Structure formats: C-alpha cells, structure tokens
Length: 488
Image (tube, rainbow, N blue to C red; front, top):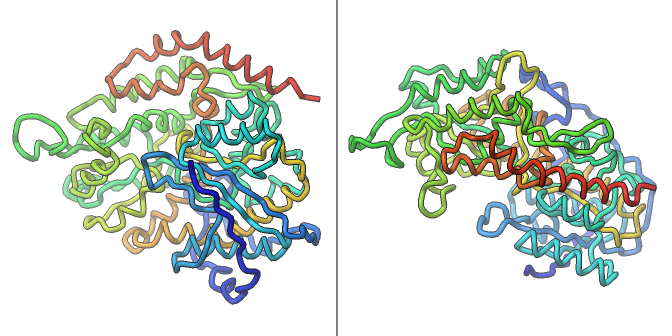
C-alpha cells in the first residue's frame, strides 16, 4: 500500500510562470498530421473560459497507482512538493499553483503501488460511501472492472469539461468511449500516457556501416512500410564472438519485446477490437485481414538470425535490451517513449522512427499507447461535486497544456535534437496519431495475450483466436449489460 500524501502548494510564485510560459520548440499536435511530418502552426491565444469560483479550500484527492517492479513507471505527477530544477517537475508545480490559486482549492493524493490494490481500495471506499477520492488515475487495463462494477461515472456528466479543446487527448476521448459514454480520458495534465507510446529507435552508426539509408525519407514521403523495415533488418546480423550461434552476444537487425507484435498490428490499421455503430466493442482480431497481417509479422519476428526477443534475457530484460542497443548490437530497437531519455548518454548517434505502415496505400502511421503501463483519468461514482470537479480537471488540463506539454517535449528532444533534427518530426507523428485498442484494454476473452505467442514462436493465430472467441463475446455481453443498465 502507498502512503497518503497531502500537500498544500503556496499561492504565489508568479515570477516562475514566466520561465515556462513560452517555448521556442514545436509541441505535439492533438490533431492528425500528414505523413509529411510537417507540424501545423501552433495555435496561440487559448484562454480558459471558466467562471470565477471560490471553492473555499476544497481538497481534490487523487487515487493513483504505479507499475510494481519497474521504477520508471512510478506515478509522481500530481502532488509536486517543491521545485527541483527539472523542467517537467517544475512545470507541474506551476500547474498546481495556478489551479489552486484560481479556485482556492488544494490537491491531495494517495499513491498505491499495485493497480489491482488501487482498484480494490476505490471499491472499498465506494461501498463505505466515504467519498475519499475525487479522481482516480488507474492503469488502462482496469477499465473493464471499473465499468462493469459501476465504480466510475461518464465524464460527460461533469460540468465545464470541453473535450474539443486541445488540452484533451481527442483520440483517447474517441477510442475509450463506450456506447457514447466517456468513462476515461487523457489530457496534458499528465505525461505518463505519452510515455507509454511505443516506437522504434535506430543506430545511425550501424546504418552507415551497413550502407543502409536512414528511414526518415521513407517516413516523410509515406513509403515507410513493414516490408521496407524488414528489408533493412534482414541486412544486419553478425556472430560477433564467432562461437557459431546467435545469442545475446551478437548483432541483430531488431531487438524487440512481445508487445512489438501488437504495435505492428495497430500500425497496420488493425486492432484486437473495434466498435459498431452503437459504440459497442466487437472482436476484430479474427478478420481475414488481421490474421493475414499477423502471419506476415510472425515471418519477420521469428527470424532468429536477424531478430532477437530481449524478453529471453535473464534478469531485467529492459536493462539488458538497452545494454545491447548501446553496445551497437541492434540496428533497430522497440521502445516506449519513457525509455528515450536514458538513451541520451549513448555514445553512438541514434534516431527515432515511427512504427511502419503495412502498405503504402495506408493514409497514416499509427502508434500505440500501451494498455498495461498506460493510464487514464476517471471519476468515482461517489463524487457528487461534479461541477467543481469538472472545473478543476479542465483547469488542470489547460495548465498542463500551457506549461507541462512544452517542458515534456523539450526533455524528450534535449540531447537528441542536437544530433538529429528529424526526431522532432517523428515525435509530432507519434503523438498525433496515437491509438488506444479497446480489445487489449478491455481484455475480452484474454485475447490480448496473443502477444505471448511470440515467446514460443507460435504461428497458429487462427486457432488461438477461435479458442477464445466464445469467452470474448461473453465478456462483451457482460460489459454491454453494464453499459446499458443505467442508460436512462
């Protein structure tokens, strides 16, 4: 269990606002950028249209959760106790100061290490009727439990929330909606949802050594496809220690984890589930198109001479993967955005590449927000102060957009942009075209575990889906009943 933290931030420090009010670097768009990677001009002059309100010291208490065993996913983005000189921390500090000053309110938080324990804590609070928590930020895979057990409300019931504003993630609002209800959303109040976006990095030194063209040109002209990437991957491999076998001591075209399979699926325009005209999910993993594409992905990933599954490494495979990449043992490496910063000390130059399309005819590149480590914002059913909560969340999102967003973007680019001007364009595409796959988030019939096939080099995706389809449809039926139960 975590410790209860309650911190009342001071209601001044206006000089600090000037430090982060402006940024000379481009910031990610919430719209859809073209494959040219050209950012639209940043809109300016946004204002927060909320009524002047004195909340008389109201404490907004967050319930948050970490990802056990991986410190990099510790959630520390709400109660910021002090400035420490780091850009994102200090921008979040300013966010809190501005909101608390505006409304005469306070911010509290209870952080629990396990997302399961956090859901249980919320459930206990709901049954006790104590309204201990105003806002819950769980991991995305908790969505089914929260909806089926009627633990969270439709955010549209909150007053003053405007999902059309750029400080809200329009894609999260659309993808996470169920039967036209929005139980969860994301905004620029937080960065961990952005940190959970998956992509690839590549080693420029190896590109030069093997006379391989960097992917930027292909990406920006729309021709970056899975087969183009596979062509480059297959051109790089070497038994570095000359022991006659390929293992973690050797050089590969791709270092990957099992989640890579799902990211490639999303990038191809497919998903585990889609929604019908009523906004209800249905299984799409069993479509002929999805099955065919996955089988082709197996052909690429299962070539053990050129692709290495880092999850077979002993100990912390994330550490091992990064070590291999920084030792020039991988041309490409699958990665989440949260892992970009630790790579900045790498001696060899590296760049960021978006996950490739399946074919050139596809209009956009798509990136995945990881359903395990990713988060979303929701509100417990016991919260009856819907107008004040709506004002508070709208203001937190706005202040995040104005201050946290540029600081976070700068941190990602610092140390990379000096080496690689195109990385900014890659981030634009990744952030603008992110996707949330309800099939994996809701985990209908355990279908999301199809990625575990990679661990055994299993290719029988048809049989895998068929065995789970009946249970998946039962799960959908149960979810649908819960959604429509109180539809009035």
